[in-house]
Image 1 (tube, rainbow, N blue to C red):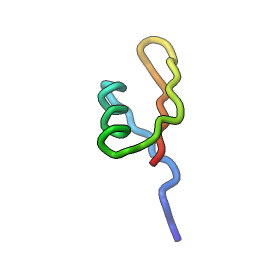
Image 2: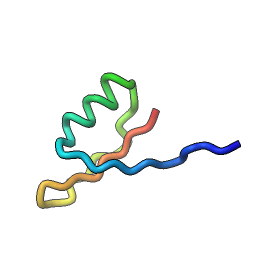
Image 3: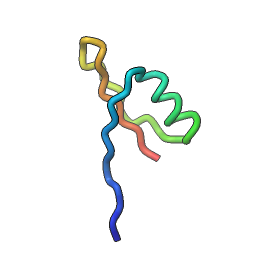
Image 4: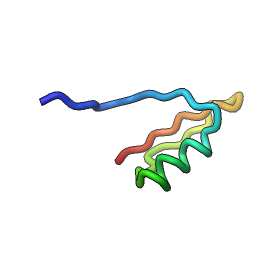
Length: 46
């Protein structure tokens, strides 16, 4: 059986994307790290 283990998405607005995945899809926030220069590493899971 095949399954998807990881997907990487580049987004323009981290907070908007996080709100969608967390609030609309019910995903759990696992990590939110500031990488500097406005970049963040955000990990969510179902």
